Every structure is written in C-alpha cells, then in structure tokens.
Image (tube, rainbow, N blue to C red; front, side):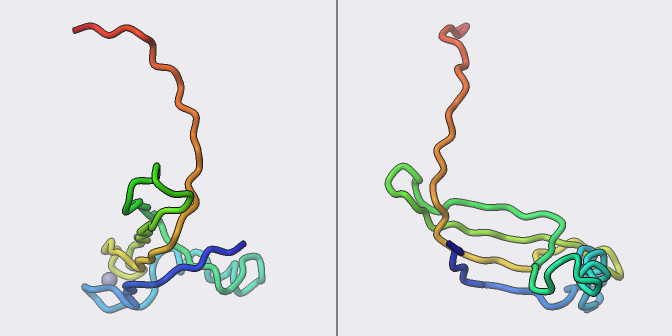
Length: 103
Ligand SMILES: [Zn+2]
C-alpha cells in the first residue's frame, strides 16, 4: 500500500547560483534516460526523518521527511524537498544492555 505524502516545501533551484539540477539528479539522469531507473523517482544525497508525536500512542505517526542534496554546479548543499506523511510504527527489539551500572 503506497503511503500518501504531502509536499510542504520544495526547492526547484540552488539558493546561491540558481542552477536547477542537483548532484544526485545529474548522476541519475543517464539511468532515467536508459530506463534503468523510473523517471518519477526522486533522488537525494541524504534525508532525515522525524516523528512528530510519540510513536507509543498509535500504529502510525505523523512524520516529517526532509531531503538534502548539493547543487550540480556550485556544490552548495541545501534541502530540496520536505514532506509529511503518516509512517507506520515498526517495533524494534532492543538489545539487552546489561543489568549493572557503575554509579
Ligand atoms: Zn549552486
């Protein structure tokens, strides 16, 4: 089931030199043109994901996802897109840390 995402901010160009293409878009371009990567795939160099409420109270939590990339011309790093969506909570089993601590 695809998760519905809402774009809340999007940068269409470098804030410094106004070049429209990022490094990851530049790298993905030949792959998209040859059909090795779907054209609609959004590329980025990194991203962060932040849950905006306590995940213990629901099965899904409002989540902010911000993508980062670097300008394909001048190299300036900037946030290219921010989205919000309801992310399913995934249970992760914690490793035991040991029962003793030095005080
Ligand atoms: Zn630039």
